[in-house]
Length: 228
Ligand code: TIU
Image 1 (cartoon, rainbow, N blue to C red):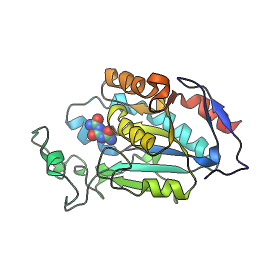
Image 2: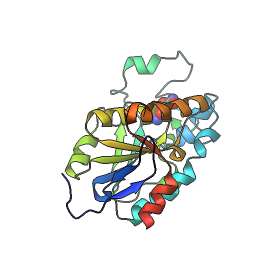
Image 3: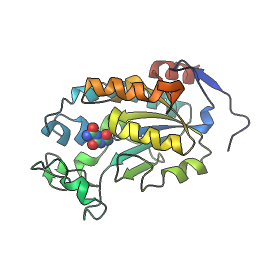
């Protein structure tokens, strides 16, 4: 569905400029959760350098403010499971063989369990009333969720995808969205990985081959376009 009166904005991106009708475009912020980003969380406990993810907080905060200021749809996701873990595949639970697993007590409550402090979105990006929150059991935001229905019912055809981590949940979601017919723009400064080499290649894979999965841009261009 396209809203006929919606103006088109164009921002610089690779492999070529990204044009979008704001009313038909949603901002999708992936898994900006305390357990992945905060120094005392599960990610840090596993030995990851959370500063690699924390640098995306401020660009996301500015983009979200501009997005809300333009009256557009913003959607937030969280990776996590039911408290009884009935939606947690055994393969996901035991992979890695680590001592601490999903559902175990962690530094901020039970790890990746809905309702626990560590599962929640960081306060800097707290969802506003009315903004959908998608609780997802997998890496992709479309798997076993009502995200596609929400987007279809809102007339959304394009997505600006941000959040963490670039090569895992962001890439998986962009690929899922691509196969469902959405065009995706990924602002490079708004996505983060614990691993710099995966950040670089995760973005390169999206924009390669003429934009095989979508576009890679920058949030400053987007914010400027939204505020123009
Ligand atoms: N949100 C997300 O990417 N979940 C992960 O588990 N990412 C890792 O990089 N481990």
